[in-house]
Image (cartoon, rainbow, N blue to C red; front, side):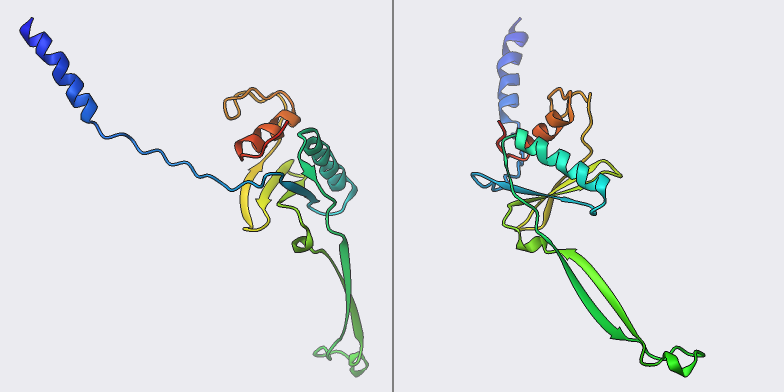
Length: 169
């Protein structure tokens, strides 16, 4: 009995001397009222429709969504040099090349959301740092995503935004 009464206080002393385990949590600076812009992988009808669906989910989450940057077309004309073995009249021919791009850096949004319907994929990145914060496939019927039950794609997106520290309603 003496040994038992002595063992309990000694075990408490040893348990109290164990060094606490370090836990590291990365805190991201989230703007007070963050804004989002949704950019489709390309401008085919199916890609734009998927991007529009994600825009509607973000609006339902009550986050600020702004219009994407407009597409810009640049046309460059280059003179073709003579191709080896080709007749001499090929010299002086010109080729017109049109390049279309969106100026994503011109957007004022805090976050850029890239969507791709072919892979059912969404990528969220912070515009200022170009840091990719999340890449996921919104799914219905998934259980226990970040310890929440997810029943719809909207729930999936809301849970993802919440885990990034972005306030949704």
